[in-house]
Amino acid sequence: MAELATIARPYAEALFKASGSDLGAAATWLDELAVIAANAQLQQFAGNPRVTAEQTFDVVSGVAKANLPEAAKNFLRAVLDNGRLGVLPEIASQFRVLKNAQSGSSDAIVYSAFALDGSALTDLAATLEKRFGRKLNLRVELEPELIGGVRVVVGDEVLDTSVKARLEQMKVALIS
Image (cartoon, rainbow, N blue to C red; front, side, top):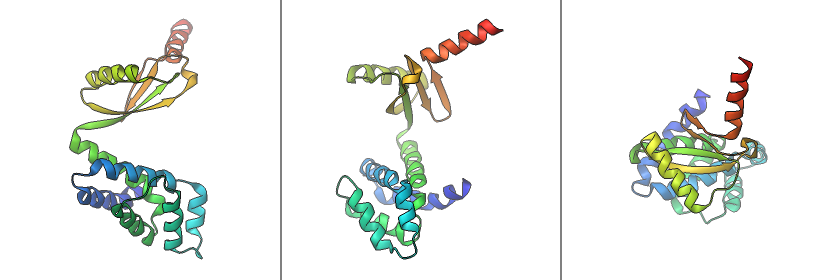
């Protein structure tokens, strides 16, 4: 999908420069818009030639959970006027990369068999930051198939300490 990345890059860079010191707030509303834009029904609605960019804007801003700041509305209008609604998820992804590069952190997804409470998540975050050597922005997703333990994905690095992975390792060792 190099084409999407190529289209999204100027939008992400422009938003990054325009956001200045308010990168966290911009990332929050941009992520929300990206989730909304990824909806297949919205894509179909926006792709209808009889639907105007303003009608699509009204639908997207109406679905948003929080009131969008003026910068978000202006950005969304620019994206819609150029027919780039489908690129919003990639714009959000590239914006996150730029934001993380500036702050020296990385996004991490923690797959866990069970919900993690506050103290367990804090301890896990400290251990993972020490292991990966950088600040991590953790997001937890439940995956009951793991049976126990966690699997952590940071960029292209994976740390799998789940029971499922250990059982697979034992299976391979027994078969060989």
